[in-house]
Amino acid sequence: EQDASYYAQLYKEKGITGGHVILLNKKDSEYYPETKRQALLALSTYPGGLQVGGGITAENAREYLDAGASHVIVTSYVFRNGDISFENLNRMMDAVGKKRLVLDLSCRKKEDAYYVVTDRWQKFTEEEVTLELMEKLGAYCDEFLIHAVDVEGKAKGIEVSLAKLLGEYNGHPVTYAGGVGSMEDIQTLKMAAGGKVDVTVGSALDLFGGTIPFEKLIGNL
Image 1 (cartoon, helix red, strand yellow):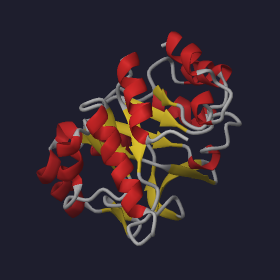
Image 2: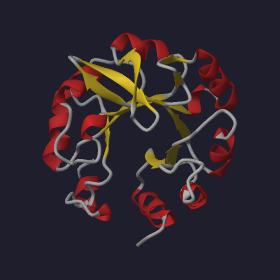
Image 3: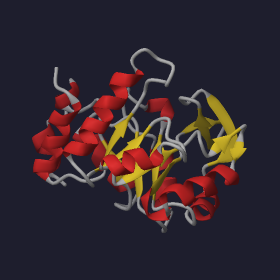
Image 4: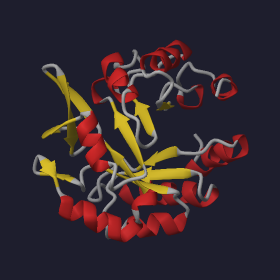
């Protein structure tokens, strides 16, 4: 029942940085204008405190940064036709700079490996999430956001094997997203990743109808 500025103000008051504002409606959706308005409302409420993603391109990224985003989050614009588009990656670098770019390596498991998926997580790319890939892409970004797509939004537990892999990376800050449904899940992530990986919690929060108390969560940061 609240608009985006309510949550942005709450995060601001609690001193939480790096929250994610994600535009989930496509540009051709009748809901897109309101989706965008809400995103810009959140960013302007908490300038410098939130990151934004969802349909970000080199052409529109500056608008969101100017509106108050600390970083833009990009997946599908960079991963095209199954591979990394270094042309688009360099275009994004030119538009926003390395320090304000987060690469989202949303991934799904196939056989025994995790592969980057795009187009609202429906298309597998050829890019396996490995330490080598993260080292290569680290030259272009400030942070990584890793969605474990198979458990995203289900609040039924995390992908432990993915968390262990991310814990072996020693470069940029990494935020894990997907499957967190309890404080125990957060502890499991911490143990699996050796305390080296941040976590994003969304639908599992009581603010959004979940069971994790917001105040308890931030009290354990």
